[in-house]
Image 1 (cartoon, rainbow, N blue to C red):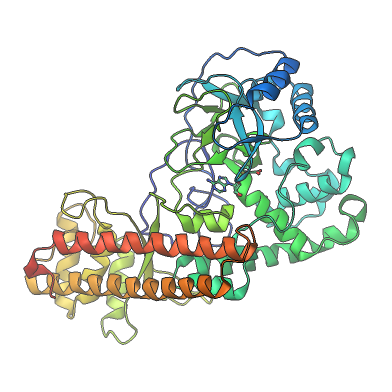
Image 2: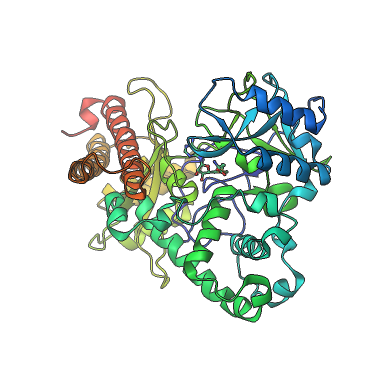
Length: 507
Ligand SMILES: C[S@@+](CC[C@H](N)C(=O)[O-])C[C@H]1O[C@@H](n2cnc3c(N)ncnc32)[C@H](O)[C@@H]1O
């Protein structure tokens, strides 16, 4: 889907480590999303004392009894095994302040000592990072070049799983979520996916599934030639599960130019208001997390995976948040094939750094997707909806070549960006904004009907369905995605109505 991401708003995270599909990433997964690399990361330092591991375990056992944040301990054996394992690898700074517990959302890290904002919660060295180059040399030699880093890490997990207790990574591997417990939309049934059919999540899921299928085909011969490493039959479902596990846990480390799993660190759960990020201290070769707030002993320590909307959380991480402040919706705008000026308009857009989506066969769709986020204040000056989206609407509305030339001249006179200012012709500007408004309203209607369907599904399934059954989880996730998009659309509509004077929005 090359090109579709262009013109989208920057999500505003910058630094060295990143995760989720928000990230600016070099090796494209092929689904057109900018991923992993660019984002996050501030390398900061703080001093932490290192209690004796046995003391950590003992403390953990009594302190986790504190009734805070619904965290339960994992088994004592798992804790001890994990701490021993980290200790053997010289990773004392990993468990100095936290240990693994069980939350409502699987394993998590919770504080074993009071942690203050600004303190380092943990750090792990480069040696603990699982990077694609840790695959057995035999596998590396045979893998086709274009097999992605996600697929390579998935193969790593499969090979280590096959070794079982003999794996040197076993204490970590055995804590990874089992098949069936990952709720990424790539595992949703067709009818479940239909619940989000108006969302970009639908298309992105279909694309991701196709990519995983293609990667599975690409690694088939290696799997077949290496039963001693992978066992006799790795099914596509096994591979998809390993791949989804990687997508939900791997970090792009820009400094090392690699994707990596970071054992222990990947037990942090995500919170949308959390400011704590995983960063990589290039100088000392450590990945570390600095607390963004104070934590009492026994409370769950949170991390931000990035400012990720529910659509990305659902696809990459298999969960959504009911009230996600980072929600976004993709607004698709396209120049009609019936438009006599289509060719000229596309030339103009492309010449001004506004690319349009290319189909797989290379033909131009004539359109582009624009991500919009919640507009916080309808009446405030704020950022409002993206300038590029408004610019595209202005170009769409032009009905003569002369006006297109004027637009180009206007852009050249100013900062080179096309149609960024309201058009001088008030009627034309009103037409463009009305077009945009109509588009947003029709998208709202689509989501409204999706929400009605979702309500119907919930009613039909009745109250007997367990809250943890996959269908219940998926319906709830679909509801979060759609209602999040609805909130964004409504805020954009309110902003557009207020921002443009009555004379510039035809009603
Ligand atoms: C990096 S792992 C975190 C550790 C994970 N809880 C575990 O059991 O291993 C990411 C996964 O944790 C879960 N998760 C993290 N934050 C969550 C949240 N706020 N709500 C629900 N699930 C969450 C999701 O299953 C996600 O795919």
